[in-house]
Amino acid sequence: MKHNKFYLVFWVAVLLLVGLSKAYFVEANQDVTKKLIKDLESRDWKIRDNAALVLGNMKSEKAIEPLIRALRKECILYKQDEHKEDVIRSYVLSLAGIGKQAIPVLKPYLSDKNKDVRQWVTIALGYLGEKQVVDDLITILKKGESGRQRSLAANALGGLGDRRAIPALKAALDDPFAIWVGRDIRILLVRESAKSALNQLGEEWDESKK
Image 1 (cartoon, rainbow, N blue to C red):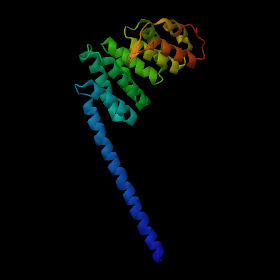
Image 2: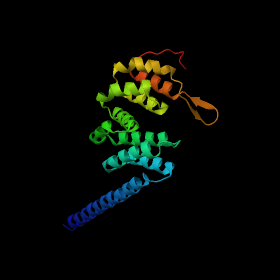
Image 3: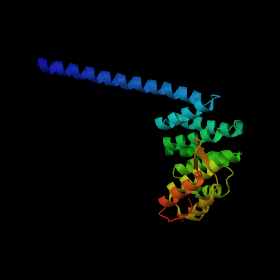
Image 4: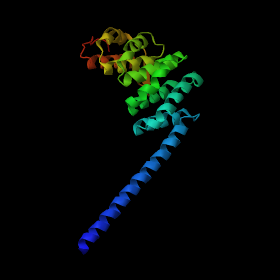
């Protein structure tokens, strides 16, 4: 009988500790989320970029609206900043990382008065598997002014698996946009994204396009 009472007390204590630990973890997690959301307003692009990536990894639904607002702000207030597209890319990937619960929050921004906002939101929706944006992604890939947008549009099209994108993806194998990694490595970013997308679609492409 004594043993039974001992085990009962022991397991009650364990359960209480587990419950307290979970409560503490949730509270700490909420504090971190608030701090990261605040960091999205920083004037330092590296802080904004890092905050976005961490929020995406945390998959916090509370971060969806702040990330979209930050994306819009980046398009409008930082349009001349050389790091703008690096940061926006992080917003897009973070929203995709949070998951499909971001879709209904993103969709109203498809009619935003700012063209840049509309295009980045289209790419984010593409990453989230929304097939209704296929035609718009193809347009971005073919006519987008931003090389990074064209590259991400190609990636999204590969993930969506719609074969209507194949002609545009093959045409993108001639896209000249490139980035430098260090001083010596030059990556033809849109071409590489188009190759990857064509591979996902099971489509052969001209091996001479390197």
